[in-house]
Amino acid sequence: MWMGSFVRHVVRARLDGREDEVRAVFAVIEEAIEPSQQMGEESNLAIVGFLEDLQNGNLHSGGSTPSDFRPYLGPKSLKA
Image (cartoon, rainbow, N blue to C red):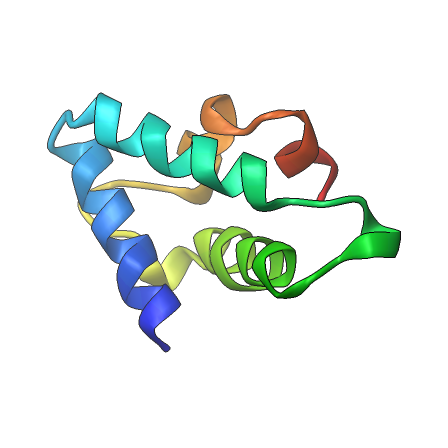
């Protein structure tokens, strides 16, 4: 449940123009993602928690959409 709140925070940060903060979040998410055969708790939280919640349009506000965050995704995030 707290991951949904965190996604809302990241959405608001992007809408407020806090690009450094948003990029920092996505850098941490990218770093947390491990190859699928080695998926640990951090990787699972990054993918199932953050990235999947980010795709939930109900967590977006102010005209934000999940697709607005595609440019922030790294190669591992895109694959996940």
